[in-house]
Amino acid sequence: MSIRVLVADDQEIVRTGLAMILGAQPGIDVVGEAADGREAVDLARRLRPDVCLFDIRMPVLDGIEATRRLAGPTVDDPLAVVVITTFDLDEYVYAALRAGARGFLLKNAGADMLTRAVHAAAAGDALIAPSITARLLAAFAENSPSTPPAQPIDPLTGREEQILVAVARGRTNNEIAGEFHITLSTVKSHIAGLMTKLGARNRVEIAMWAYETNRVRSR
Image 1 (cartoon, rainbow, N blue to C red):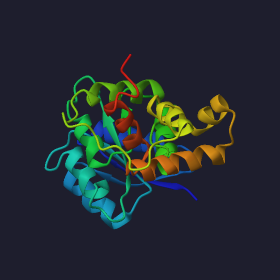
Image 2 (tube, rainbow, N blue to C red):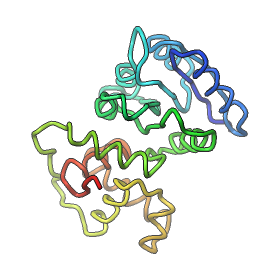
Image 3 (spheres, rainbow, N blue to C red):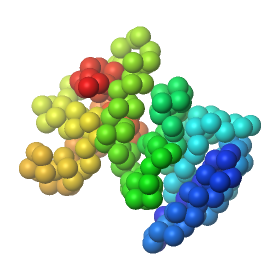
Image 4 (cartoon, helix red, strand yellow):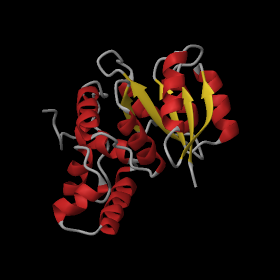
């Protein structure tokens, strides 16, 4: 089945370009376009797309609030949201992480990266571009609350610590499996265990916890 995508960006030329690129890819179907955050939320709730691709800066309702309403901690059935950012200009990306965004995409990314981002988000694989996401998380982890994050009741095992660092550095499941010589199903099992222990809903939140607890530092 095709991955159903909703695209939201207030710049028509960007929105149209994203929709055209995605629509031309096999296995991806753009089911809706929105010019502002409120329209994006309304369309997302009605259409229930597999992936929402949101600009972080939109009128009426910005991408952060739109993400929170569709993927925030209080949402019972959250949608997968990927935030489009310029990185160097958007100081609100950390807030978007907290709002429930699964991943990020730079606006200058090419068609291949855009397609990979959508497939990754649909599969629940939040970290889409290691070099981008690791830098992004490291930079905005510096703006995290001064109160240290809660430690898990059950301590992480040595292997879980290794997987945690790998996830925070943007490694994919396949890369982690190859690095530690374990099966893909074992990697997925470890990640599921990390989510349970850390109270994380996705890989981005696992990575954030790693940065906030200084398991991984910016390079």
